[in-house]
Length: 323
Length: 63
Image (cartoon, one colour):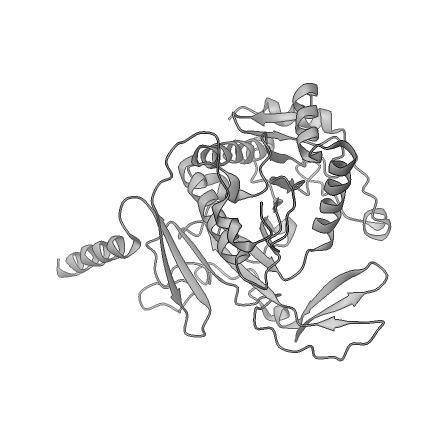
């Protein structure tokens, strides 16, 4: 059963997806559903091994384009609607071991082009308002299959965090005539102390308001709303800087750093969003190699994050990592 | 920017004029109707690369 239920207190949708309780959970070696189907072996999600990247519809989707009717009737207080959308899996490699960090820089540059293609194809669908590209990495985040992969959720509405960001962008633009994110980028370049790395067209820094100790954001230095706005050179540059950040994460403590990586870019609802500015946000849950930053009472119950560290110091640590 | 979805894929890029590599895309369907898309990069289309690999595999079997 899958549907969207309205939370009238927070004014946001919650997706129920009970079929996901049965999804694959940490399969034993040799039974990865994301590996290519071996001759004589059990059928996996991907029949062929000869590819650079594979994208397919998630077998256990939270959202479906032909979502059925809700299992429960809504009312004025509790509206419900079909959980309409598209959930895709993006395989980075046919090789079961390794991570995004282990790919070559050239391959990460190619992945940027695959992301762009998915953004444009999914976003062109009449029912899709927002294409959300992300990766959950590591068991600390809740990863259930280790084969290197990312995901895409194409929403039929603007998710609440995105909507909040869009509202802030609009208010800043109306008040100052400038893009909020461009102002942030210019400020970070000027202050320099929170910069982790930068290239010709992109900059990686831990923001002034970081909620996680090693929360790196990667921004286009010029005003670009989405992946569709990048030149070929900018796409390459993004892949190069992204790879550098990933290597710094793994080099920090010589472990494979778990993280959530999310992309924020222009909605695909057909409206103009002049204040929207493409960026990638990382949320690594570790504050030390052994200690997790939990989303506990204050974060989950009050919505206020308590960061035990200073972004200026943590950026310095990542900046110092030799790669 | 106009108020249309058609503009998504046609935004004018600026900056470095480097050429994009050829991206080959082969879309198929799974038995249950789900989409499955293979991407490969380079000068050869995905189908050609696959058929060459099939030939190589067949050669190996012959040996």
